[in-house]
Length: 202
Ligand code: 5GP
Image (cartoon, rainbow, N blue to C red):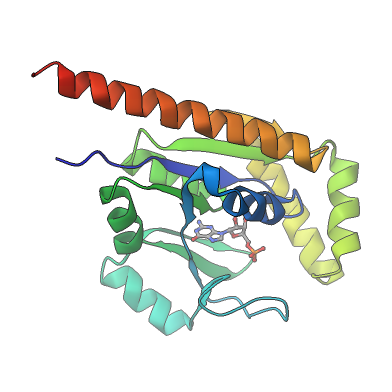
């Protein structure tokens, strides 16, 4: 049987720079990781691409996907549904390739319950003050939405304790290097263990 890939899960409050970090991780082909495209009922933003950033859908269609068992996990965040497609993730893992999910903690913890070997990574900003500043500066959300996201951040920080790794995004490049080193270590360890387990029966 072919060895399965590793499931990496990344979370962190809105404004911590997860999106930029994920883009950098994908850019570096040596990381050999595929990003799963989630479905959401949130409105598309002007810098986003349907089918690439998210698969944008309606609440009815999203609920249908839940009822049909098509979601590995899903959560409601800031009044919108977000969910991970089950089949796509399982197919990539079955091919022995590694998958990266960029999802919030409710979903991440559900994934950990289904795949206990998943590697959970949490990104924190250097301070709460810095998080507020970053959210305000990027100008994507209204003041009301920023307030909601900061309230969500409080709960999200509490969940960080349940993650396997916590990274501080102070300097972006340093943070990305630390994450890459951790991911590489996991991949190397897994391939060695897989090899040893095969050799055991030779
Ligand atoms: P945004 O609206 O800023 O793109 O995303 C809001 C939050 O939803 C982020 O914390 C993001 O990580 C999370 N998210 C994105 N996709 C998924 C998903 O498929 N499942 C879950 N549980 N959260 C998601």
